[in-house]
Image (cartoon, rainbow, N blue to C red; front, top):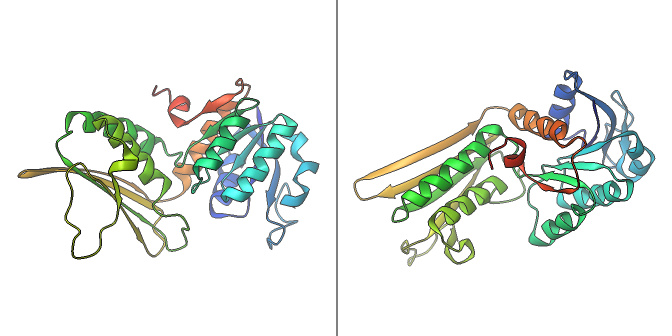
Length: 258
């Protein structure tokens, strides 16, 4: 049985993970933390602890599950490394510097990280890469829609989809990505990979990839109707990670897609 500690337990994802984990006989929630100012501190079972006091409970768990913000994730990761705990990271908005810290930590502890833990999205990444390889002369545009509280833009999932397209087409994403278009000289250039973000309402997350050619186009979409698919993926990752050796893993490892 995996003993987990939920970081960001009072957030949208934290609450969903908590609910599903309690119904899963293969795991046990042995700790929960949130920011010190959270009104949920002291509530719940187990009671939510201030993140500043996390070191007091981390020894109870095997795996930390984190869906917070980059700064908080780095703090949780440091504690996980110091205590020898595993970690599942679903936080988005991570920079290259953050990813380097995670890679260094993964030399000491097992870490699963992914901007989207949905089974469907990770299968979609495989499909998109394969399709891009066969349609390298098509124009590709990616459009993502999320709720109006989302901070990072574009979404981490949109970026991963763009990476899959670039890999399939053997392009350098840094040179070919275009984030939105504006102005009198916004004509689409050959080889661009367009990435566009829409924010509004309570949309959980929608991603559509367009492969547009002469006289035809292919559209592939993934639409999340709730956060349960993300939470289920995170718990699946936690159970898969249990007793794994140190290393950096992603959902393709968890789903055996590699």
